Length: 267
Image (cartoon, rainbow, N blue to C red):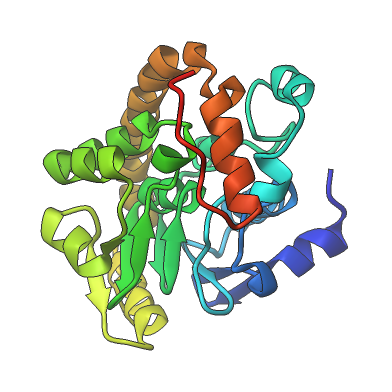
């Protein structure tokens, strides 16, 4: 568990009227998600959910990127014994897939992306109710090349009606831009350079003109169906335990050591 000072340091919380801005604050690590950052974001989302005067949250990142995904050195270089004990790369209480299904009041959340959105962060962004990205933002589903597979991300793309595009991104693992994602229907708006937070706030103001309970009814239904689909997909993929394979270990080690991976073995 994190103390209040750790939460305050890792995710900044700012409220302006009915709109809360949550800012990921590990800029020196390009906001890579450690277990602690996931837990801090979870705590801030709970704080937002409980605040009566807060109707909508925007999640953004401090520094050059929204987030480059999982902190590889912490979450992907664990020992085999630790992976088996935890049931995956995430630490106890640090499952990013649960961030948006613990709500009591089901308030809308907008992802406000810039720079880079990679791996685990792609999942968080796609699970948000609305997505704004700065022009030129680079997305990548890194789980493909890392050996973990990308069924969850394929499912989230499919849920946003970007199935063909999502399949290509999940199978190739290539970078794609905010403009490509918008054209495919995966995100809502592309903002001019340097104006992503301004555009997100404009979109937030549009949403907040409506009766809050009316908005939350839609959010609750959307997230329930999204989570049900994700759970069904994970039921198929989780038993594969790809985090225990030689290919995953080699890919993660190669990334950490800043070298090309050795030829993968399919085991």
